[in-house]
Image (cartoon, rainbow, N blue to C red; front, top):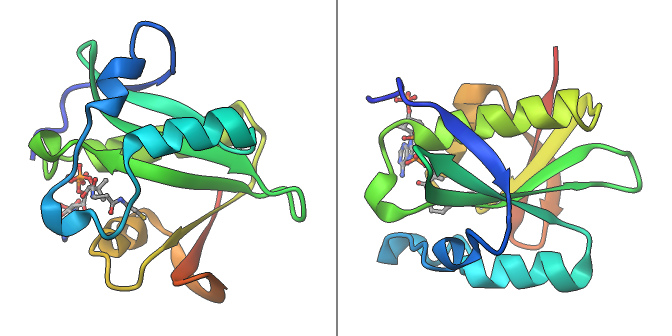
Length: 149
Ligand SMILES: CC(C)(COP(=O)(O)OP(=O)(O)OC[C@H]1O[C@@H](n2cnc3c(N)ncnc32)[C@H](O)[C@@H]1OP(=O)(O)O)[C@@H](O)C(=O)NCCC(=O)NCCS
């Protein structure tokens, strides 16, 4: 696994939005996520989620969104994908760790949640970081939660 290259999370801008909407996942993964274009529009018009470009060596390789739950103030992660040509190299894990650090240090969150379809192999990635399944559901997705140290 190549994990020596740095990953940064960058604001979406006039410079990178075209690279974000060009991101694509494998055909068998399309059932688990919406398109990156949908996520950018959701963030823009609903103003609940906030997008970040996942960047490696100045190249956009993925997208990830964050939000704050107004009910319990936990941070949420959603709309997360790594372009198919950059998958399985450790970058998804690095991007998640960067997002957890952002939520902890820049958003002062102690608790983070996400939802995922139970059959999505991404669950293994979330569990390897320390997310645990709960008995909560968001539609057909199970809610997983993580507490910062
Ligand atoms: C989920 C996703 C972002 C992971 O990105 P990635 O860069 O391939 O993940 P990584 O290479 O960092 O993998 C990290 C770990 O998860 C495991 N993993 C990642 N994808 C996996 C898969 N499809 N099946 C099984 N394990 C997987 C890796 O083996 C690795 O484990 P390790 O650290 O023990 O070696 C990517 O597969 C993706 O974009 N999937 C489609 C969209 C999606 O489902 N998003 C999540 C919605 S909740």
